[in-house]
Image (cartoon, rainbow, N blue to C red; front, side, top):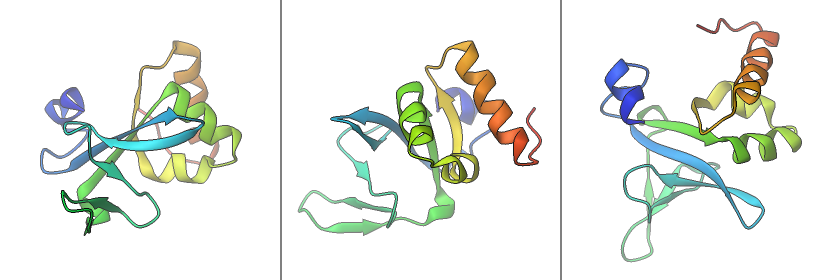
Length: 111
């Protein structure tokens, strides 16, 4: 996310979470504070006391690792991937190509 912020792909003010696979499911970890985990259904994170903090969806940027992308794609979550994910990390060139084709197939411009 550091490079994405430096290049203007992601606003410097956004809170960034990266999705990765843990125990067979995708978990979105805070890209800078690895103990914070985002619930993508409610856009909440736990505070130090175990309470929930509601985040503004517009102030959050999501990314995926290759493993998380493969898992979500296999579960038919293409719409979520296309509409919510901004950063695709740690992917092989053929995986990146597949992401681009998936996004283009929905009529989006990829640059």
